[in-house]
Image 1 (cartoon, helix red, strand yellow):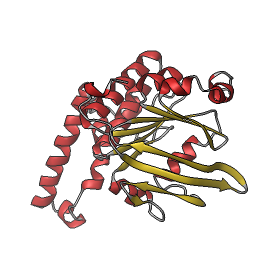
Image 2 (image 1 turned 60 degrees about the vertical axis):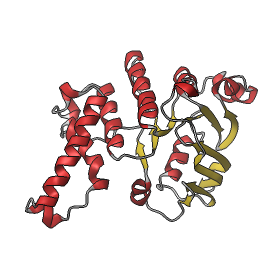
Image 3 (image 1 turned 90 degrees about the horizontal axis):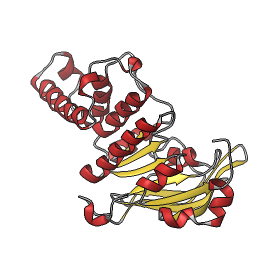
Length: 268
């Protein structure tokens, strides 16, 4: 990760605080008494072997799962008993391990879906194309055109995403998340299934989003080279418990982490 003096946005105070979270399904513990924070403008990685509780943690943060114990606060506001839609409106957006795109829609139309959070026009306004709806559509399209340019996908913006290579589909999904103008992005394995070149490109865009927009990132990733290169801090889960938390170099030399993940094959 770039040194702090090279960043447009300095790493700040905690924007997300996870306090003593426990989550279980039918008596099986997915997360046990887990606490960590995410600092404003940082890239925070969550790593660990399969079944460690990584995706479950993201699902707790964006409201899909409700933990049985503990609390999660975003910008000082507790997220308990709040739906994923309301959490998205608060400024937390999510990409998924398996692509959740509309395959028959064009790339730019998929990105435009991310602007729904900012739509104020009523059904009546849209149906009759009243001035309020037309102004809103113009603003939304302009925002999405800027994202298309930023992600360097101008040539494929009108192509149905189902016809695009996997790496470009992942870039479109990132664009849709950016369209929400979230201050915190949760990226669930953004580079899964990519080749080396596609990973390099996605790393570049993640860093540019972080550095140019100041967007805080939390990402799950299995490629340790990627994690060590782009993360400011890394939290390591194993069987739902934290076994390491700190800068990449510190985590890399943590013996518990080496034993549980980095030094042992887990069938990733």
